[in-house]
Image 1 (tube, rainbow, N blue to C red):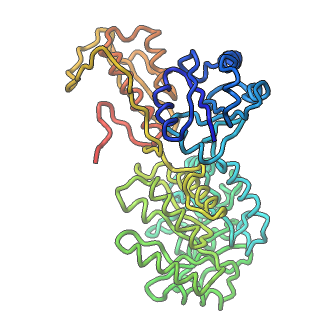
Image 2 (cartoon, rainbow, N blue to C red):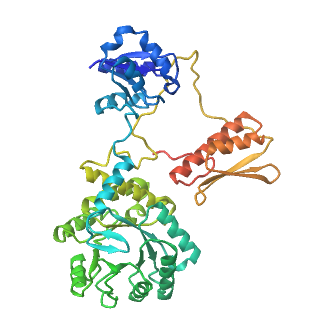
Image 3 (cartoon, one colour):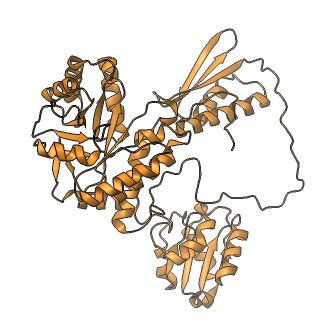
Length: 484
């Protein structure tokens, strides 16, 4: 197949390198960047080729062109397609197939594919319901725990619950304190959340008194039944009960006891242990599934995300894959420390990615949904041009104090904003915004920077603050990101 690759001047060298490997020809238009190509420019250049244009089977344009390539195809009778937006993806795109209307690297699945398989799955009958959620054989539902909720003020609990719902949680879990039982407070919180949010509510306690008060207030789910408290916990047909092993009985024994006592909506939690009991814990889930093929399972991810000093985003991806492989119905997690900030949103994305992958019969890769934040699958571009002179640069020297004043920079995760406070004779300005660029422009507009060294420093620190905001990583001014 004979291909003609259309490109601009800046990408010429890279495009020719790809063309050599696939036996294609290259036409360079008199423009630097692909997005500045115009259809008339293309038509004029191809007309100059005369009959030679008819020798090609395809004409492939950069993915970023903003005109309809079918206009070119209509004039010359040669099939025209849009390639990828980036030259580095060209070789892969040619092997996967091309589109006339969209850049070829646009994911075939992505969120649209996920929504399709999700909606198809939701049409199946449920084993039972928790609130309005179908349970048993569906995508894992995310349970977000408000740790020590019984010790928080009402507005704090509601704010946290809404934050979790907006982050992707399906069920809100009221965390109790084992050493300080407060059944009346549990009753109040269940009533409060039932009035203020539209989601099922669970009570996380081993105390029969707290569990029963939560049920009377309208709780949809109980965490958890054990061999010790099962005799005192009230049995309601509308409530789902999570069963856990304890010192007296393993998971099979407690499940059998719950069934004997007439509990109908039973969810088993073999308990996902932290390192270095993790392999045995996964085996418990696997062994349980061999015996109880369809009983819903709960898996708690907090033991992993909290008890290992590694970025939670990757761990939540693995937890999501494990959950879907084992047929887990509920995934329990929380954000109880700085390093697990954003964990519910990460878990939601991981579940979406892995559920889509399982549905189409492949690994959770190249789907258009991913958990890549700090790293990328594609290599970055490297300057390959020529320069009159190359200047080696050593360590940076300190900068002189700016007579216009100095800045303290912060990140407010609650507001999702960068804060830059200006000081000269005390704090005279505070800038708040979501982007480094917008804050920089406002600072320059007000002439609060008087030397280039300070301007460069300020731009660097504000951009670092913006990256920290996106990564949900604590920001400390003048502190570099860590290296391994």
